[in-house]
Amino acid sequence: MEAPMLSIPVELLTHIFEACDDFSQVVALASVCKHTHEAWETNPGTIIWRVAGTQIRSFDDALMAVRATAIVSKAYQAGTLPPVVEINSLNGNSRLPDLAELKEVLNMQYLVRCIEWMYFNSEKSHIGEFEDNLFLHMKYGHYPAAQRRFPECLSEDIPGTKNATIDSFRDCFYRAMYRLLLAGAVLARVYLAPLFHARGEGGKEAFFGRVGLEDYHSKYWELCEQIPNSEIGPPRPEDITYIRQFPVYNYDVTDWSEIGVWRNREYETCFGPFASWIVDDGRKRQQNQPQNPDHVDPDWAENPTDVGAVRELMLLLVAYDHFHSKFSNVTWAKCGVFPYQKKQGNRTVSIVRFGIFQLEQVTMPAAFEDLTKEYLYTDYHPVLEGSPGEAIPYQFDAYYITTGLLDYKRRGRFNRNRENPGPPAMLELWHFALRHYLNLGFKSGMFWMPRRPSYFQSTWWKEVGRGEIFINPDWAPVQRHIAGVISWDHET
Image (tube, rainbow, N blue to C red):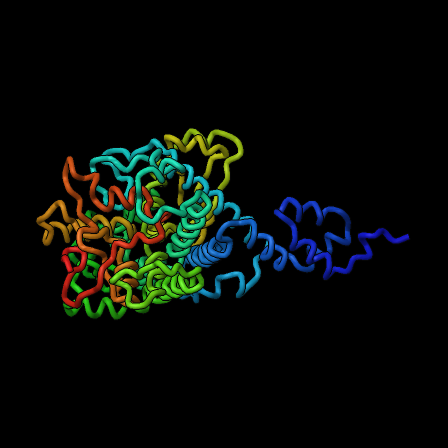
């Protein structure tokens, strides 16, 4: 007599797989017999998509980030500029996930769980000044992690938090973090264009030595010994001129200048694909939300659905601020070991951090508690060793060029008000998206950085620091854009 399980058609078994509550049940069912295992092997993508979509928070966003990271990894290993990516081609509806992608999604999920734990519990501050957000010289500490916890965070009378729960927080937090990882991979092409252009020209070793990491001289000393002493040193004016051929490295010029007009036009190519995707997604989310008859649209919204678009952009912005400071990159010449690395059960994940734009491998501890007073350890990905792209992480430091060298020059020339320093250099994506698609800019005072004792009243320390957007969906520090006016420095 045939066993009952063997009489079940593969199509029906597939539906049974899809109804599993989690992947442990999928594994158990696939292990029952050869027949169920064959059913699993026949339709793994469909099963993964159905189960993960219901059991893994923001699964599609994580999947897109994993796929975009894989594209960058392949390009960097070949020593080439990553290709332009159609954002929607990365989602699960475009192509069903495979088992390898599921495993990496679970690793990326674990990374975001680490970030969440640090968000609520970290006691660590960066060495030197408190560089716990995008303002590298906010010297007066940061918003206390313990005050962000549930339900403590709801006791501060924050507007718009009436319906906030830990689940609604996580829906926003996880989606924003995955999308930040997606942005890092998709925009690596834009920010590392000077590097790949110089590599293509050849004979740029001295340039790489001046605009790359100090480790470039240590790791590639034989090559660097051939560089004349007269060519060694810090970046030169001609280096800056070379880098400014690329639009994202002209963030410090006004919109209405000749260069500003050119830059903004080029931004449509640089940022447009990702920015339009996230704006459109926000509008669709807002349109599909249950409508509250008592809700009044803010005066800055030209269309009711713009509220959702701004929400997704602000989620991404605040995620960047909190994600940015949770890592420590120990590069080739400054090797070291974090205490948790000596323990068993650590996991790794591949990422491209927004603002860094290099392929990195993050080592995560088995116990979240190990991150109470430590950062997450990152290193340039070992997959690059021995490949044509091995030197890429050392040849061009996009973060230093953008937030250090160029930003320092801008502040030295234009900024005489230390309490209103202006936006961090890496926020051009947000400026473009707000202005181009929504006719908005950041509100006046958004980047106000007062001295003691008023610093705790600033938007960045208080509202960004406590992650208000994760619990208050109406948080939107924006105002109508006025041509010829810098919005964050102008009261409308």
